[in-house]
Image 1 (spheres, rainbow, N blue to C red):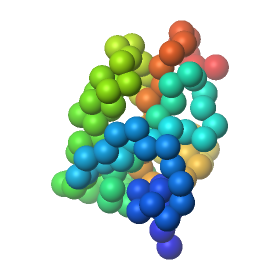
Image 2: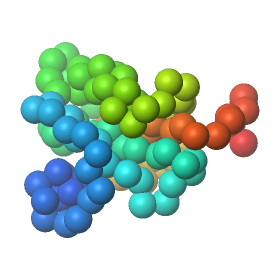
Image 3: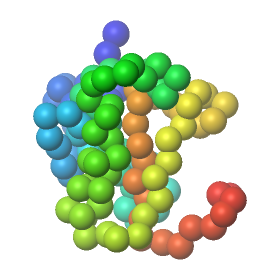
Length: 109
């Protein structure tokens, strides 16, 4: 069964898409944790980091993150990748959170 993110990528459910190419799609998070909160998702449905194959669309995620940040006009941002439910992954489809527009602390709170 297709994930929520796959359904957004396919246009089956609405999503605020801010950038896309042949490998990845970036859209605004519906529960933003910062003024800019975009999810960057490979078009290929991969459950998470633990399932990443040797080749494929996922290899473009960090390049896509840079291009999305540039398109949104942000130069300082945080990238977050969660693996598994206990780490905060709620959709089993590999994705990168791009957060910007506020100061962040370390460790995250």
